[in-house]
Length: 123
Image 1 (cartoon, helix red, strand yellow):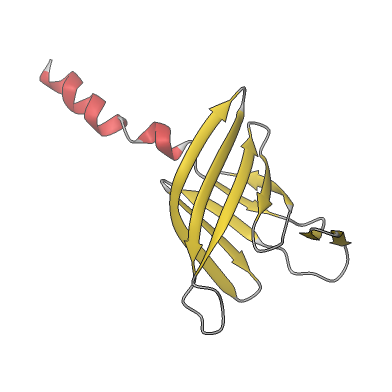
Image 2 (image 1 turned 60 degrees about the horizontal axis):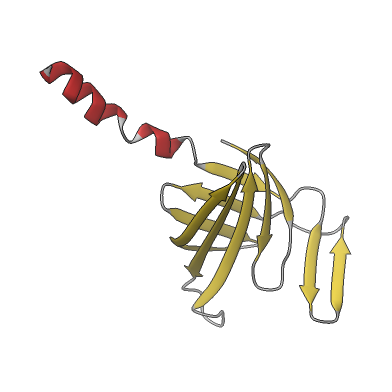
């Protein structure tokens, strides 16, 4: 019985690891404001989005932002995540909201600092 308890405690964290992902927007960069959206398909640097445990990070050009997940909801194979991510670079906002919609097919949609990108994801 003691061995089963120890095994259960050791394996308990691994379901959370299955939710970790890494995504990139390799097809296009999309910026949206109240008046419309602009799509760039040729001259852009792909962003990287990562979920590691209870943290989200997003890297864009030469800076990365990171923060704890504040909201997580799942429904019929789609997970909605929200975080307030931070950067320490001078001249940048201290915090910015990051919203992510991630599905079981490995596709994410992000909304962050005017970007509204679709991304392909892997583990």
